[in-house]
Image (tube, rainbow, N blue to C red):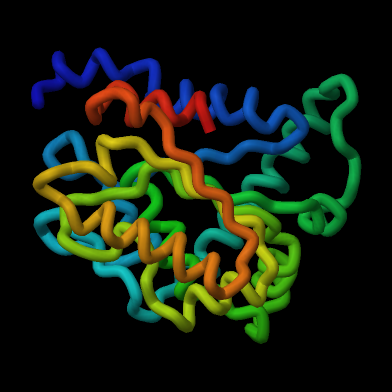
Length: 233
């Protein structure tokens, strides 16, 4: 795909996605994390959260510093935003301490290949960690959204590890799954749909608070509807 081809997807670029999410969560501070690199100008590489092969395939499941990295980004972004609002005398600027802001409820949203970061985070979440900031973050984590997860590998678009799924249930998180035919009915990557079914069913069997919604299933899978899920979830 050429750069010219990619222009048609500019309505879904980083800035546009941030605005979409801000409308979806109007009373929240929205932070959108840019991938560390792009593979073939098309596939996001989040190597700041987990290892990737030279072919852009995520290596999910090993122990990483994904949670620590996210928590540091979160704290730094909150502090930067708070200071900017105060120094610029923004009307109704938040003057709460950073610790007060840090204690607000947190939701995580992953879209497409960004869901591999969510999956790695779920592996690495440790409510008993000795790191105080990470404990606070996990305590305040309330909801996780997977939006049409998929990647160029051949496994781990969805979590199937029983112990990790049990941990999500035990953390009492609200879990949301939104999918389109583009991913889970892909005839070449049938494993994605199979994993998604296992993910949802296992969590239901465990008694987790999970909601699954299927979008555009009266239509053929398309990249256009894959992106539209950002406005539909």
